[in-house]
Image (tube, rainbow, N blue to C red; front, side, top):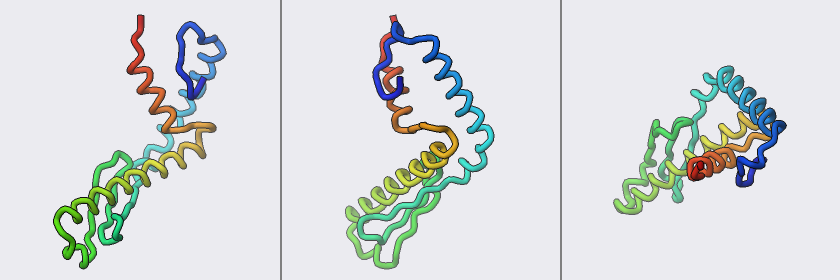
Length: 126
């Protein structure tokens, strides 16, 4: 059922039971590890290594640190360094969350779950 387009006509009772059980495990896990998720931070560096960013699990920027040499970069290059560092920090935070979830919820794939959610939002229900 995971990773493919879901046709409501093809859903079996066993599929619903499996989805319900998985949702229950995820809900329980979230309640039990909410504090751990709050502590997840991601870190990333720009291409030159002169800019470092730290973000929360939600992607909120906590800190951007500039190496002393970063101020020698042109404004456009510096802006790209910041953007790159923040993007990499967000990817790192996502990876850390996925590691937490994969260890606790067997077979959970955050990227696949997000894609399925997007698919459901785009599916016209008749």
